[in-house]
Length: 190
Image 1 (spheres, rainbow, N blue to C red):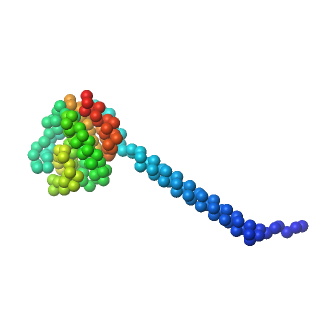
Image 2 (image 1 turned 30 degrees about the vertical axis):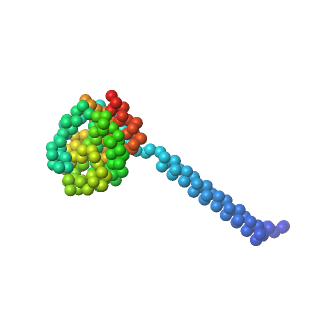
């Protein structure tokens, strides 16, 4: 009988180096694939797509930042995006620059955006309005009436009301520029 052969130290080192090389290639491929996934994800739009709905807008009457009475009925004949939000809400903060740019682009076409803050005082909201340079109407809703009227507790939530006072689109979650441009101009141009 012959003795089983023992691998030489040189063979061991060679196999170790091949294994280390294969492991290094695997790590590099993993990192490259992760970067490709991240690049792909950053170019995709993961914001909420609106639901198409058809119900009468609520008769919402609140106050503006100066305490003056305001009403959704005063905007009949215009397309209104009612945005329910709060200063403490991260997706609300994230979508505000997009909403502002969309408002500025379409306000001359009979479009208005009404931002209804849920549950906060003017003292809490005014610094936020100044920070973002908001030019659209901002209403206060310390009692969360709008949330009850639109039957939601989600923030942000947005509703597009057509010129006849019918709610046509509903978003629960943040809105992207891409989705605003894909859905709202159709209603503005009707």
